[in-house]
Length: 248
Image 1 (cartoon, helix red, strand yellow):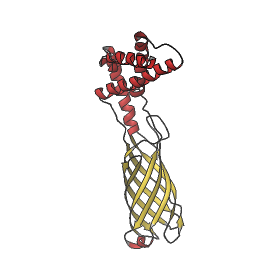
Image 2 (cartoon, one colour; image 1 turned 180 degrees about the horizontal axis):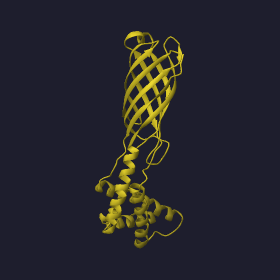
Image 3 (cartoon, rainbow, N blue to C red; image 1 turned 45 degrees about the vertical axis):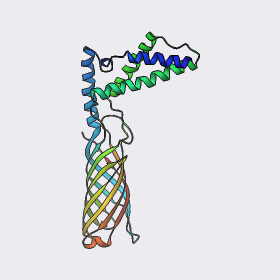
Image 4 (cartoon, helix red, strand yellow; image 1 turned 90 degrees about the vertical axis):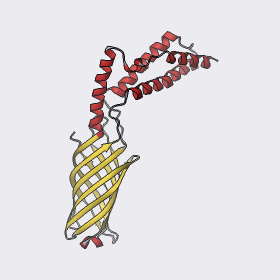
């Protein structure tokens, strides 16, 4: 019964919440607008990563030849990070989160044998939660994750195959699917093995820094099939990693 009474109190309190409270009133609108702009800039910086990259891996051919490719180049990664939530989305997000966390806090109080809070105490808890949530979602620091969902990854690389004595220029375009990118690549080889490769790459993109700007570490699996010239007899399968320094 106490739990039911507490939930009723929460519902009544939330029903009395004016929409503007989730976004700010008067001067609060200015503060919220500033936070939105700062948050948008930070999230835009995290959404886009552009810079030089270096990589290393292990490659082998169907015939059993092994090589240690070393690469350098430039990359562009776009991640699925919302730059600015709409006013309605933000309001609903705050309200939904407050409902859940307020109900949980009241249930914890009852579980400890404490009496259900009154309306004034609920208002105080609610204001505290709203301030915390607004800071979390609108603050100038994005909620960085180790694996951001990728949208697009482009890499232009020069690859050295020491054992084969070859240089490969490769363009790869990966499209985001869940937490990985999958996409085609086209490569041209010079040296002892001359020809054109067509291939594909599967990669996961790690963003170890939680701030607006993070280096991107790619862990990848790639297959390159020889299409012309000497490359026809030199298919390559590679497992490797590369690091991109974000300059934006």
